[in-house]
Length: 160
Ligand SMILES: CC(C)(COP(=O)(O)OP(=O)(O)OC[C@H]1O[C@@H](n2cnc3c(N)ncnc32)[C@H](O)[C@@H]1OP(=O)(O)O)[C@@H](O)C(=O)NCCC(=O)NCCS
Image 1 (tube, helix red, strand yellow):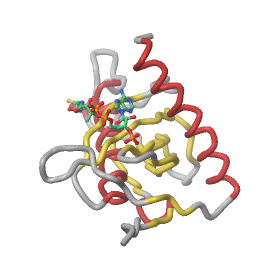
Image 2 (cartoon, rainbow, N blue to C red):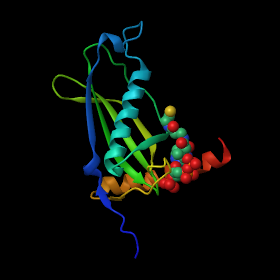
Image 3 (tube, helix red, strand yellow):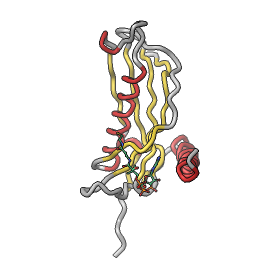
Image 4 (cartoon, helix red, strand yellow):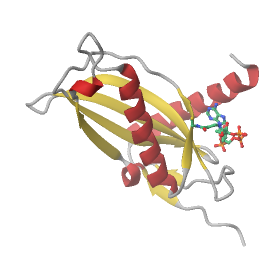
């Protein structure tokens, strides 16, 4: 009998995390260390991928880390992780980071695409649930995710 592959919605694993910038997050210029934000981005991507795949995952690659604005003490940062594309064992997770002002307005800080791979109990890649696309935005992200996935494979093969 053919194996039934589970299907999950983007909304099922959508993950939102908040942080307040504290003194220990700042560099000598009183601006947040980029590396701490990178760690939070990886954590949110990991949680999103674990929630989609229902098991252990690891980060295979990170695509884009452009910092659009600085973060300072007492700023509130919001990170939102969502699955945009799934392959066989890999999941592309988009993490958007925002500075949230006290009136609730959000200003983009960073958008990163990470690829995480689901592992079985022997730490070998395992098949992940399919992604059920519910909106035109999710469909458009899937198409661009597919292109990015092909580019990553080409980059890995050709070493550029
Ligand atoms: C990620 C890892 C498991 C892939 O191993 P591999 O031998 O290339 O495995 P496979 O060829 O079977 O690829 C498994 C999946 O990972 C994807 N993949 C592999 N390398 C990738 C890369 N650099 N970027 C994006 N995806 C990648 C493959 O496309 C494949 O996806 P698919 O199953 O959806 O088609 C392996 O490179 C690894 O363990 N890396 C270390 C990861 C780690 O420890 N991260 C934490 C950082 S300290």
